[in-house]
Image 1 (cartoon, each protein chain N blue to C red):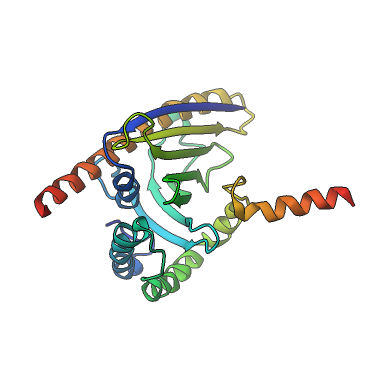
Image 2: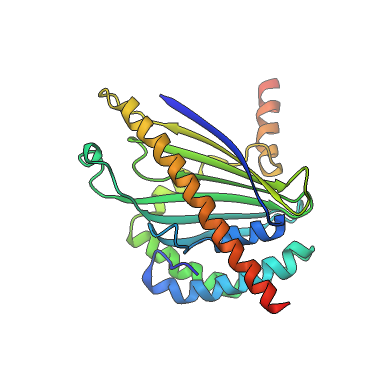
Amino acid sequence: MSSSIGEKCTKIKQEYDSCFNSWYSERFLKGDASPMCDDLFFKYKDCLLKTLEEKKLDTLLADARKENPFPNTSTSSSSSSSTESGKKE
Amino acid sequence: MVKFYQHTFSFEHAWDNVTYAFWLRYPNPFASHVIGCDVIDRHVDPDTGVLRTTRLIHKQGVMPRWGRHLIKNADAYIVEESEVDPKTQTMVTRTKNLNHVRVMQVEETLTFTVHPENPKWTQVKTEARIVSEMRWGLTGRVENFGITKFMDNSVRARKGMAHILERLRHNAALAG
C-alpha cells in the first residue's frame, strides 16, 4: 500500500486502505454500497488535512477542484439546468 | 498551444479486477517516482450509487537539462478524480497536475469498460490534453517533450497495472 503524503498519516492511511479494499471488492462491486470504513476515514482525513495545510497544498487543491471533472454526470445537471433557466429570464 | 492524444487498449482481466487494481496500483515497480497517494474525498452518490473519489498523488519527476531553469522543484502533485458505476460497469478517472501548470498542464481521462467482444476483458480508453502557456518560443519544445513523456508514462502505467493484476490473479489462484 502506498504511503501518505504526510509521513505521520501513513499508518492510519494504510488501515483505511485495507478497509476500503475489502469494502470495494466484497461489498460495493456486489451491489452493497452501505458504508463500512467511515470512522477510519475521518481519523485519516483529520491527519491529512493538517498535512495539506502545513505543505500549503490546501488552497492549490481547492482551486483545482472548483472545476467539475465530470460535467456530464448527474451532480452537475442541477447547475447546468439552473444556467438554462437563468438564460430564459 | 494544445496537443491531444488518444489511445485504446485492453487488459485480459475482468472489469471488477481492473478497477480494483486501479486502487492498488501504487506502489509498483514501474512507478518508483510516486512517493505518496492520498484519498482527499470519497462518497457514494445516494441517487445514482456511483462511487466518487478524489485522490492526491505526489510524484518526483526528472526534468531534461533545458527545462531545469523552468522547474527548480521537481516535486509534482497530481489530482485524480474518479467515478465508478457498478451498474453500468464503467469507471472514469480524470487526472491533472496541480503545480507547474504554467509550464505544462496535462489532463488525462481514462474510461474503463467491459470489452465489447470479450466480457472477461476490460477496454481502456485514454484521452489526454497537453497545454503549455509558455511564450518564449519554448512552447513547442515543452509540448513535444510533454507528449513523449506522457506516452512513456502511459506505457509504464499500463505495465504497473498489469503487474498488480498478475499479482491479484496469482493470489486468487493460491486462495482458490
